[in-house]
Length: 180
Image (cartoon, helix red, strand yellow):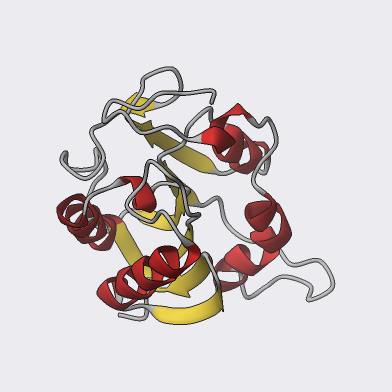
């Protein structure tokens, strides 16, 4: 295990160097909402987006997005990359209605139900209209979702609480769009 969190939870994925496969494979899907109208359909373009990477770990997803030319605010409970924030307790250090894309990969299963609710409230606060969220979970022995079944139940609860439109939904991961 490569990293210890402040709440004594571990994330085995933080030792990896490249962006998570779900982000790499769905990057274009995340951007479709933000394509500008005057683009050639063969070569879609979009404005620079404001992205928040919640639970950024070693910054691998943040770096991927930055290299694509977007603004990224990276947050984690350990200050070795990004801004140190107690996720699920602190307010996100971002203005209301200021974020286009929210990345929340491999984090929520380590937060208690109370912490997840607080973080979901913060995600709703900072997101603009038509924002996109990408969320991934996995079962882990030291998490609140130890089995696939617990992870699926957690995912359903999170998706329902966020209350956004389903864009892509698979076991352990989803992409959703804020429609209000």
